[in-house]
Length: 194
Image (tube, rainbow, N blue to C red; front, side, top):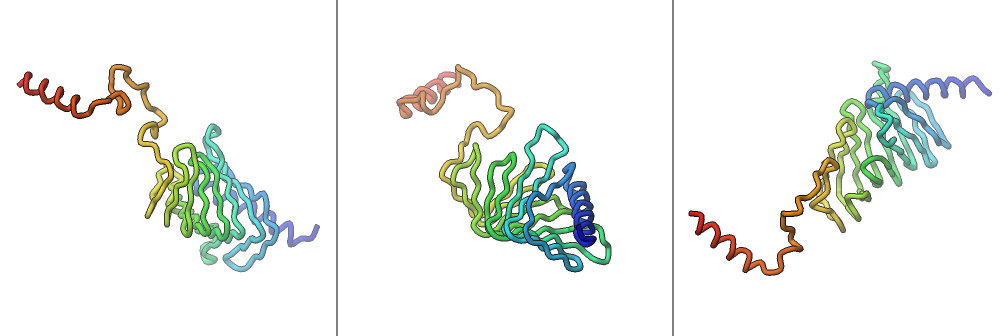
């Protein structure tokens, strides 16, 4: 193997380790990078790039990232590792949240944010057919911010994983057959108690 390949492989491993440490992941693995071009302050990978971020918590699902092109960029003066990773073309991220897809995304390493733009879609157990103009995924705490959202299905109940079992004595919307009658009965009971 030529010397340049080994220098690239070592640099890639160090960058992956720096990226993983910044983002509270144990490590990052670049599993596919068919074409790579290195210039000062940039690594441009093209041709269907795939990488995986492994969380510190072994129980959590890894974050698998795919894009036609991934560009690592950093300040050459500080040599502190990548500050930003641009994801371009058929971006797809699979993790605990489900599958997020868009045409472009930016991984902002210092702020632990992954921002999706341009035809954003989300499919998961909670959401079906969700689209947005922008989605910001906070990798540190799992918070999500979205703009201009539409969805085929977003359940109101059951969003919290730590939900208590429903009280069998409580009424649900499906239990009430006569809304006018129940409202009259509630008003009468309140008036009687007053």
